[in-house]
Length: 423
Image (cartoon, rainbow, N blue to C red; front, side):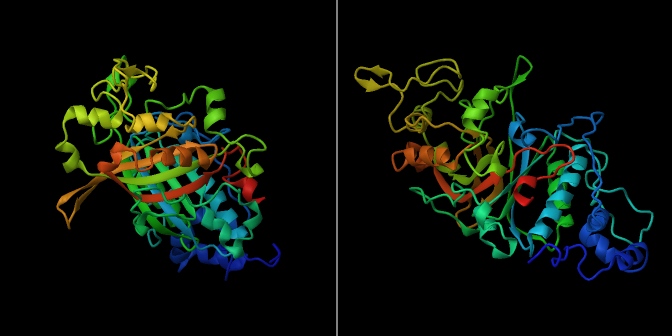
């Protein structure tokens, strides 16, 4: 369908005169409730530019070469949502991301997505639960899944990167369809869980009719402090998680591991990254009955320090080839030993989760919201395959959710999320 023949989602059924008339009186509430004032402006080709506000308290910048949610250290709370796309054209999807760009800057400034209207007969433009809270280091990270490119009405098939495929089945996978796949993802991270939830809620509310929610997962991290620096967080098995991460301040290391470089994928992915998601249930009751020495042998690290077995410093080289009396110091079926057998690396951004109890067993429904960023999904796949059926940690975990998303590069001022894909 030509652009001329396509109708904007926000324009459907409304002439400009009708829109202005309706927005001013009477039944405008239904329209505003669905799209917000910015939606109306977008329909007129006028999405106002919003800049990062450096005066905002606890603010992370939105604009930059890369999405800041991937770079930001030490996120405390996460609200991760996977969406189905119901847009009927590329033009509709483009408008949605343009609107999300504006809203994202406002939300990361700690502002409402729109000021309250004086007309109390209309729904409030912002849901309001973050009023009085600051920006709380909110970051918003956006990505698109392989299934988005299979929607013929969007005309994006030729833009799909070859490496953007559903993750394969791994040994010991017992996936729950309620936590698999998705066309679009949003990851909101913040110091305050209500700020993260408010952001996702308002983005989805503004895109009603264009997306539906598929699944979501909350997560949390806590950080001990040493010399005024946050330490590596511990997972619910009490072991440190993320010790071997690349240094996000080292641009070369990040280019080597995380950021897609020119010529390595479709051009719209240059500066972006691939996000692998896994929802991993931890069988806490079984773990709690296991001797500490056995737990450490399972991970290949000491629990108290996070150091490789036989060492005392968390960041010491693992040196998996070390032997004592002809035996490997680090058990060959330990999680870390198997991971280090491959040369691939990735940036882990994992969170713990606790979703009540499993009513069938009376046990905790808790575990790890595993998120990793890498320049090619094969890095994650190689590491996961190295665990295979050998990984001793398999006795204590079950993978329940799985998804892969291509995360856009950062946004230049005046541009919008995914511009390279939609232009």
